[in-house]
View 1 (cartoon, one colour):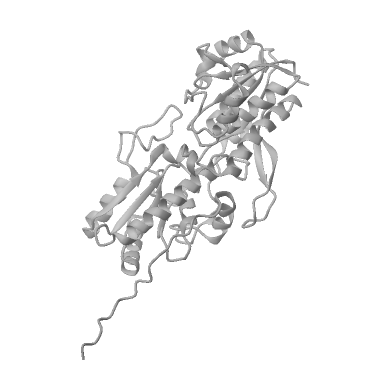
View 2 (view 1 turned 90 degrees about the vertical axis):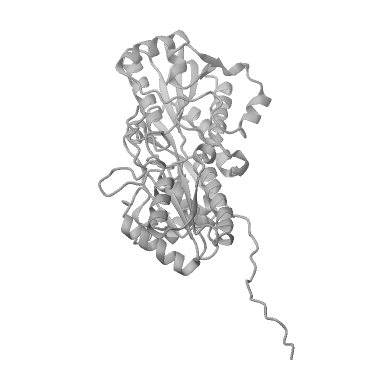
Length: 408
């Protein structure tokens, strides 16, 4: 069994509208634990440990924590610091100074790698500590879990945005012949694919969905744009920021990378994907169009959040503490779907080794796409709809041409 001691919680990477619910889940369970004394928070992720900037979460009132469950962004502050070998010694000294025996972090692949490496180093140097990861990312690409908390709310944001903007695109087609909506998502298409949930009928927007799982083919894309415009009078396109050319280069043309060697698609080093696609279409057809790049808004829009997403994010935090108290460290909490695809969502918790989560990504399965790779299949919709929930119904005119009365 793990030693009795204090706990520390950190948030890392990009925010979500439900990441604070997970934070509160960990804090609530830890503060009630007989094995955990004080509960600390890392200010700006692992940098808070290195810089001796820890927050006393025991000083926070129950009312504050309750309100935090419905608060977007990352309350502790986030970080994208990539750990170097010379960081581990100072980190361990700080953990020993505060008698940290339970180490929790909420984040994605890189965060799980941080937990794994820090806890492994501590245990190898004689400091008994248990680490458990809580999943987070709107990209939904974490290995071993049915979905990642934060994804359903971000997916609903995308679906609602495309649903409403497509009405604008349809009605303004004599002004703008095409629209492009760009989502975040470096290497997986879960978020742009969610736009398909906006469709009530097969002919509805979005008409083309571009995801990183399928290399971008310029000629095939322009052909699809032309065909759709001929049939519909306008074209609605959704693209993930990380789509690449057949040679692997980003369509965004960005060359800027972050500390984890990931391409920064929103960086000044290159134009956005939406801008590049806009330029292609305008040059090819001479049409006027617009592109919509919401960047981080889909990662923190609590007003469009899914209640089920908030509740499960909170429960994930509590589950992490339960596992740690039982001595089950070195794992990330996972969500395992128990209901069938397309049915009302039901799930239970499982675990996945931190090492595996850190070293794997989860792209969309091949059968979630149409054969041409520019749209999604019924299988994906059955996966996503129970997570996102129903979207509002909007009225449309019948567009029946009036006839003048006969004067004869």
